[in-house]
Image (cartoon, rainbow, N blue to C red; front, side, top):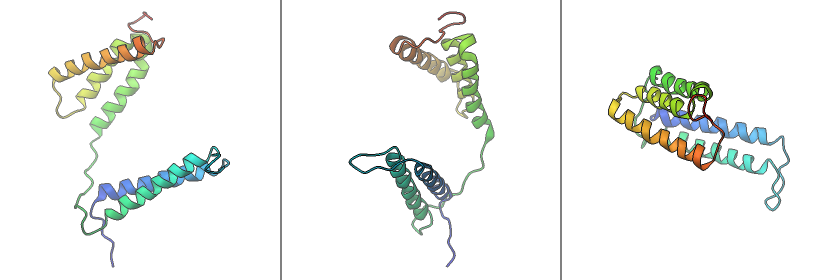
Amino acid sequence: MKLKIRNQPDFFSGLFFIVLGVAFSWMATGYSLGTAAKMGPAYFPLLLGGLLAVLGCVIAAQSVTKHADEKKIEPMVLRPFVLVLGSVALFGALLVPLGLILASLVLVVASAIASHEFGWKYTILSVIVLTGACYLIFIYGLQLPLPVWPGVR
């Protein structure tokens, strides 16, 4: 009997979960396990890694059943991937010299350009809402010592 992968995204997601779960469980074995009543440092990561691996097995197994939806993995489009990751890196590089407000503006605009549904109206609205939320949360609420504007702390 030949095994046919009917749902490729689910199959490879399941394999990824299995690899991550086994890796975390294996790394946790370097610490003491303890007991359920007195957990050691390895207890929680070993348990979560095991659960993640089991979840991966279930997802991968369901992707090869005859009831699984037929789905193929789409070819990866690099432009949005590079723009979003690049905008996050650019935010980190620009935070100190430009301040939170301008660095957030660059982050949101660069990330919005990555979308195939890009429009200036929603981008400007997103800049206002997200930059305002960043200011309220990080500067006002958490009182982090981040520069707000260039040269202003």
